[in-house]
Length: 441
Image (cartoon, rainbow, N blue to C red):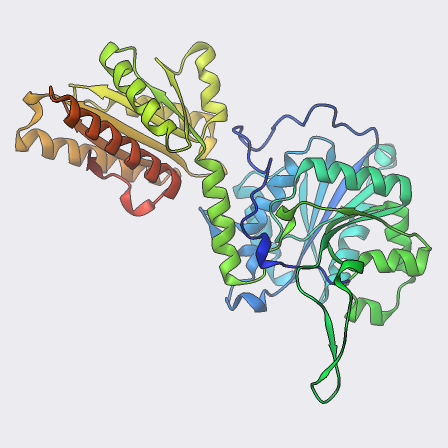
């Protein structure tokens, strides 16, 4: 069975890939805990030839982070996974070490992989055994009961499914994800004519993740041949052939698709952007006028499938938004002062929220008639441009939206709707090109 990469799965979105938390210590789903140690091996030694890019696909970046960092994050957020080993090509060891340090990945270490997929996986499995032997007093703690093997270029794996794989692997010795075949598989003759086709309903595509009891996968690699190392791709087959372990097959969600082609990178970026843009926190500063504008924006943005939470300030219990939200809107009325935005940026930097994903901060300013002078307008533009440039260096994207007060109800409603549409667009697109711009609603 081949690990599939079905284009029909491209629209599927991860259910729990990104919560509104930081991604480093997200709570596990209720009832999900394991009483045995689990480790992960991520083979990442591929060259990514099918993407047509010079950079291996696992190191291709979007939203400021390489793809492999997103995959690591998906496993780090699972509290019952104790360690992650990434097997990379020797020439990429320094790059992988830098990624681990730069994004403060924990429970992760890089080891040199091999020239083929099985050689890289074997290196990761052996590295887990080497860790056991570092100190005998840590033997029971460090030795994994179950090893989960997963592709470094499948970033949308979900904790619920990992739990099913880990439990089945412990009970059966091996377990793997499968998906229905989308296309019919045919065999051809040596002359290029149709020989026969397989009945699609009887077959499934083998996917990742796969789980194994540690002793099963270790013994399988000890016993397999050089031909297996050189040409094999299916770990479940090794467990069956060399250990007699028949894997439990579990149908996985459509989010298990892998990044194979260049277009898949764009699809992955789109999914993450949409996940990041589901909600925002709007800060009014305690002003009644700002609160009224926030209420109007909340109603207008709600029609655009986005949730807005309105708070007066990010203090006390409301400080929790700094640790769970990716988008912030600071509302000011009449006074074009950016001090509130300055304070918000300082709070976000202190919380280290922008390490994993770019944060969006939007300054929504309701201007009065005394702010219509050219000099005042220019000063606002310069101020937000300077602040935006500085924030961008910290992976915070700052934008501005200006509305003008109007006694005309119809004109005012159009302005609010326009502001809501711009807000939604800025949060969804996260465009670095618009940073520091003061847009008119």
